[in-house]
Amino acid sequence: MVLVNFFYEDSVVFSLEKKEVRVWLKNVVKKEGKKLGCLNFIFCSDRHLLEINKKFLNHTTLTDVISFDFSESKKTIEGDVYISTDRVKENAKKYSVSFKKELLRTVVHGVLHLIGYKDKKKKEKKIMFLKEQTFLKMFSSGKSSTWNKKNNV
Image 1 (cartoon, rainbow, N blue to C red):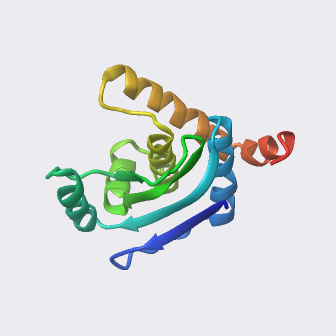
Image 2 (cartoon, rainbow, N blue to C red):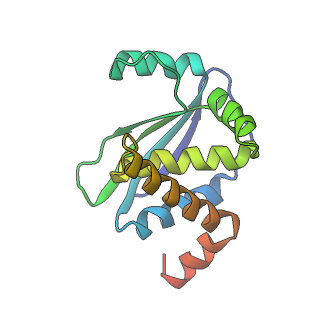
Image 3 (cartoon, rainbow, N blue to C red):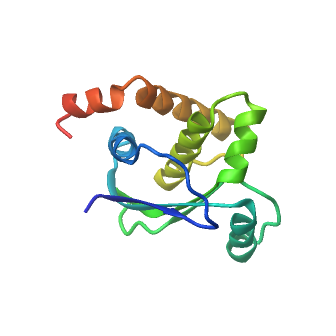
């Protein structure tokens, strides 16, 4: 069952084209040779994500995204993706991009982690960056829905 949910913690609320994002993510996952199961995106504050980072990963630093993989099969992507909207705002300012673009980059970054991509080493970071850019272009150009029709999704 394909299900993409969006939740907001700490009274964090913003406008998101949920239907478009769902179609886009389904296409991202399919393009990577996987199937989309249930994904939960939890948008929260730095404080909330820092507590999760400490509790589950023993890290004491701020981060923009943490993904928890609940997939029972290597073919299906399922999990929770926590995103700090405070970090997204800061990163958007830092890199001179819109909040929307940085939010979408962070969303796909979390999904790429669930697919199996890492970003600890220089080579892994480069691959992750290129994947993010490719999929962001697919979303912004409307190719997500074009790709969708072409591939009978």
